[in-house]
Image (cartoon, rainbow, N blue to C red; front, side, top):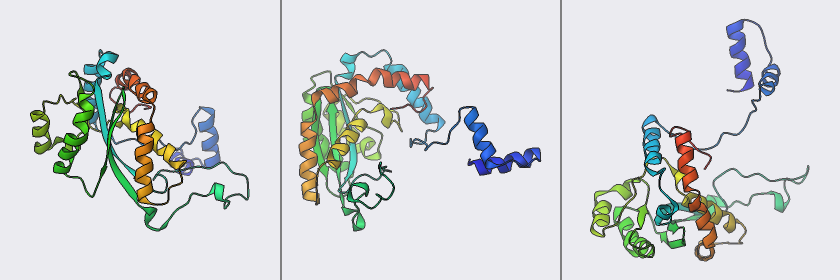
Length: 258
């Protein structure tokens, strides 16, 4: 609620007029400040319960287990920056200088969709998705890109993907069973538990430093930067899994900082 809304409600309950400034000052005195809310998936009770169960099941796993997990995900990469809110540090009067504006083009300039995977041993295969992906297309990606990456992790390898309908379809489930892939049970609405989400963020920040003017160049740079990702970066992200699991338990299945 805004300070103005709170002031109106206080006046309606107590009958005494109070200003929005008084409300703000009072809130500041007790340590409350207006902040931009963090964007997180909507967690219903069933999601929190599943997340907590996942964390309870995984809290005793050591790094040897996590090091044998192949993490996967899809993401969209825009030609001209991200869909999120950006900020710039500038002086008065500099708002229209080249360094202080965010370039845009009509219709957004296009984007590419990619599927990728990673483990503590480094990045795995990265594949561009043409058009709208369905279960059959996803199965092709699993056979062409996931399996080679998974095999490099040895016999104890575990495959992770989220609960997207394409991932849980009968076609996909049958293929994974046929290929004898051990699949990790995954709680819905849990991007904070998947280290590849942070790897996407690192990749996109690197891409913002590159001068790319068309989709073909974007695809080339995406692949180049993906392959250049240091193994140490992937290892550090996977090493955070015990802390992620602990954070979910501490928050009773709720949101975490990750």
